Length: 440
Image (cartoon, rainbow, N blue to C red; front, side, top):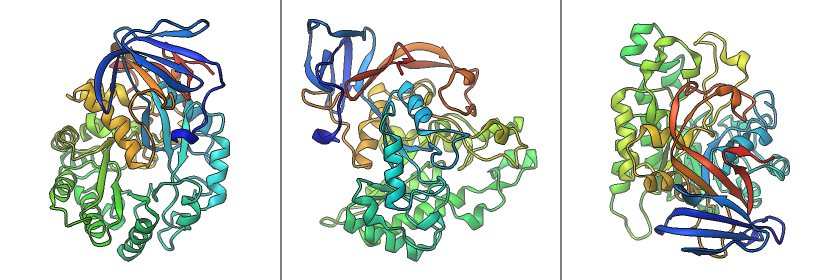
């Protein structure tokens, strides 16, 4: 990233004209000129240079490209559901210029060789793909993976996502090691013994439907444990896909603790668009499209995570984009795998269903997740790599599963009209999405 990031071919000029720029420094009306893959000028009005391509941004917001901390690209090993190429195309259509690819592949991303394979597969992708490394070998939770050799290749986020690290002693060692490497551990917060056998949230709806449930405490026990371990070790822990009111309260209390010199609880947290917008009542249809891990929770939990996002307790919105082949999602609810698509709808779901100023939504989808992952999604200023998205906040569009870039179709938002759509995405100075259409 920064000065070492590859950029578009030299001589290419692009003008984004008539937009409202929103970034970490604030808001202003400005045109943005891109040349040689970088932002060349940001001024109130810029005349197009000879031969420049002009992208209309009238009525739109121009922002740093979105950054997803939590994407399942399935490659290597599960290409029938997704590939790096198709996932990256969906990401670009959703305004993302960087995604962090989860390591629950086959083989797992638990050593340098697999990190290199993912990086090589992503060379021609329509967004930057940053692999997350596994915390433990094979994600089995038994022995630490070689974190240092993966960190030497630029990996800055490590997780066994899909499984939480169950052994607290092993997690303590991992946090101590991560602290020395100056990397972040991301935790799938679930006590497997307490969650065992559950297929949805344990509560009123699970009782009505006769489905075994996962109690909120299965998440909250892990959240509390890892906050305590972060406090003990000084390591940085990022809590993935929080879904309960209790989890939000634990993070809020941890962030409010007084700092003692350089010590304090180094904790960040994310929430998914579906946990911000859907409740466990959606499972009444027994449709496996609404099966996800952690499960959809109660209206009270949804209100709590929305409040946590609004007040800064929750730092980021992450998609947990989890494609599955159609035949797998067409199984009965108890047999179907959990997971939902998210890359193309994330921004629109947040803008439609969450009462949040657009500048706060963009912070949670762009520069704040970038900071957590050790990436650069700085302000739109001269000299920066031109990773940008142009958003029409008033556009209304219909979610059509068959039109999505993913190899899979498991979106819970199919048939819904959403407000707010990415019009253009610029990746390393190249317009990879124009007028909501992928350009390659």
